[in-house]
Image 1 (cartoon, rainbow, N blue to C red):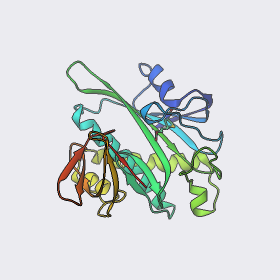
Image 2: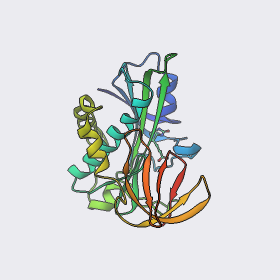
Image 3: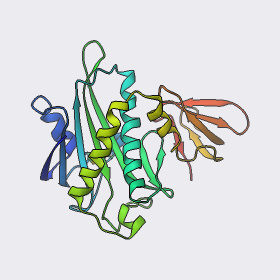
Length: 239
Ligand code: BTN
């Protein structure tokens, strides 16, 4: 993998998408500062300049179908969790792909795929924001960082190289059962009764996360009986 560090950019995902035709697969664009970082559901991703990892990995020619592209979410989530675990921090994966430590969000990711006419995946831009050295999150009640978890400071370039080493080692196992198991076993709130909001019916209920289906749907068992299977944006977690 080849990393290009940029001092300031609007968003590493936007830059990677603009430069997609010319960028080779395996290129990583990392920014010391993002001025318009993008999050899930059209949200903005704010981080203090120079404190955190904000980067995008460009992958091409993976020979994946569109339904198989979900595996890239699993791989990236497991790679981030493994990176944090290597620093002594136990991480959970909040479905579909937020990374939490002790109930607080430490990392978010935004995967943007380009599909060909036959539905095959042509390229994927995997945008990842990992909070590393930031100590205060004034606008975010529920965020944390590696430094808040360990009390240590980290070099961003070294941290990125370590992460990319883990990602690269997992890549050949993209479609393996082993990778899916590694994702499933780290699921946040798995087996723990908690409250959920079903956005399809606008009902709240007490349920237990049973796991994730191979196609990516989240399986929650309602404590009153009944199994529910959700796609992204169909359910939210209540505190
Ligand atoms: C989320 O949890 O809402 C996803 C956040 C994704 C943020 C990363 S930071 C690097 C890359 N560039 C962006 O503009 N977004 C992603």
